[in-house]
Image (cartoon, rainbow over all chains, first blue to last red; front, top):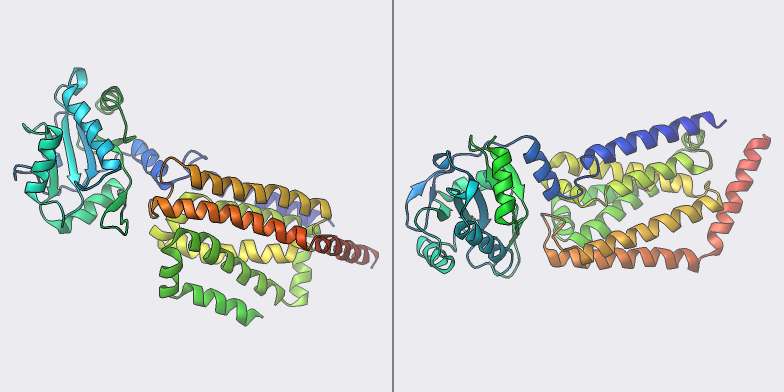
Length: 202
Length: 195
């Protein structure tokens, strides 16, 4: 009498447990952001070669920065919350240059194509002491390239209803082949970045 | 009854309705998903007697159905699953299929059969779990869903706590119901055993 129920219950537990386990990467990733970080660390991602433009109006691509470690962040200059944390972190990477970080390329990419003009980026760069080509505050030259770039990085930007945006904030580390290889917390220290660069550059 | 169930799912699947409900985290979690479960429950009521009886042989004392509903409802409480339903068409389909069929329907088919202790065990685990998940949404230092604003996450968290309390109060308020249902269930299984 009980056999069917017991069999069916075991099947439900096994299948359900497996689904929960696979769906959360072994219970390590309950959020999309955790899942993104795990997936990137496991399989570094190729990044589309979008043409970017820095605060001086100079065009460049992320691929051109290969040869030295690269840290990328996504911001918009009016942001009062997470981006200030990100940019303060970048400022530390920029000033505390030593060891593996001596020649690190820092790139902050704005996703606010309408709000962030080149002069706005310049103002922002001046405020944070970015310049000399070591820390580029950039925008996408052709706004149509932006969605693909954000998708490749796994950045989701949603309007906050008050003219600003909310977005997942993190430090993105590219490996020697220019692939996205590690994602660090927004408040990562220079030591964290140095460690991540060292592991991805082996 | 079956028509009502199908109509609820169909209306929820309409793209303006989907956009409206999924655009706000609390509506997604506490209106759309529960309504999908309700539709599944209504559908189960409409099942032919013979089907219910053959299903019942796989679901004695409501054990299988309860486990199924627990696992699947847990899945849809994971923030990543909510995000997934918004970013991936497959996950969205999965939600529209699994919530009615594997949460709503099994609850209806199993609850009356579940012994009193089983009911108590389920409620004592599920309601606090909802409240704890809700509390985690409220106090989380980070945004847990990439597709929802952080203030929506807080609202949804409080909503989930309120939902858990409301369900708890409802069950206590009609406190005699579980007893009666337990009685029915026991009586029915007694009858089945005797025949």
